[in-house]
Amino acid sequence: MAQVAAAAIEPVVLPPPTRHRALRRFLRHRLAVFGLVTIVLLVLLSAFGPYLVPYDQLFIDIRNRFAPPFVSAHIFGTDPLGRDHAARLFNAGRISLTVGFLAMMISIVIGTVVGAVAGFYGRWVGAVLMRIVDAILCFPSVFLLLALAAFIKPNVLTITLIIAATSWMEVARVVQNQIRSLRERDFTVAAEMIGASDTAIIFRELLPNVIGPIVVAATLTVARAILMESYISFLGYGIQPPMASWGNMLNNAQQYLTSAPWLAIFPGVMITLAVASFNFVGDGLRDALDDRLDAQ
Image (cartoon, rainbow, N blue to C red; front, side, top):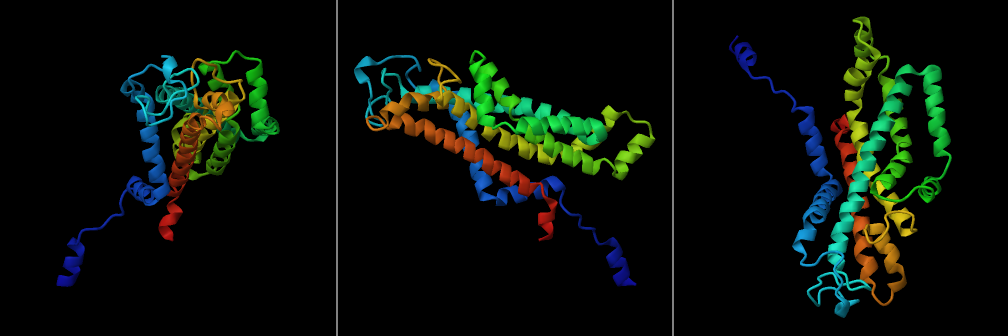
């Protein structure tokens, strides 16, 4: 009896909340942690770096044209006009990261709405919407991007909208598949039986259960948007000088690869770090949000 009583009063050990398990899985993913730290550093450098450099990005120091890095007051050297390369690099980060984040948010909203409607209603509505997605995906994204950019005056807003317009289709597919799999679950049927509207079911019942895949898609979309901006700016259809982005800095540096390689190395490293870091974070989030890993 004493053993039964002791067992009865023994505290029940509950499993840690899901968010704690997800955080632990994410922290075990070393590349994801590295990517997150790198992203934070890139954002901080882009936000505050220009204030730490004693030169404006448009200030021309004609006597120090092509100054190499780390040998003068221009820590990252200067460009052909004598402009401080560090100041331009940090300001370019503002543009490239802003385009990446804004394009991600727009494409996530469009893709989520299209995917949710297609997955919830199915039948001819879903078929029409997903055939539109398939039709857009038939065009190579880079060529579609360049075709749109060639007919629109390039600036931060238009480039962001163009990239978002060519990036939402994958998100729509992910959301459509997830919503379709949840459409016949008990909680969805119960919400319909109590008279909940379609909008309430989609946004209050279904989409909260699809947050994980959407977050993963968002991180990968930022990486894609930064890369797309770099593509079109490198080819001359994106952000135009004197405004700097990592892409057009590479474009301006290509003729000086042998005489002043730092002009290409620094923006190239920034693009590589940003894209790789967001991909690492996306991989880490995908693993962290997969509860099946706990059973392994």
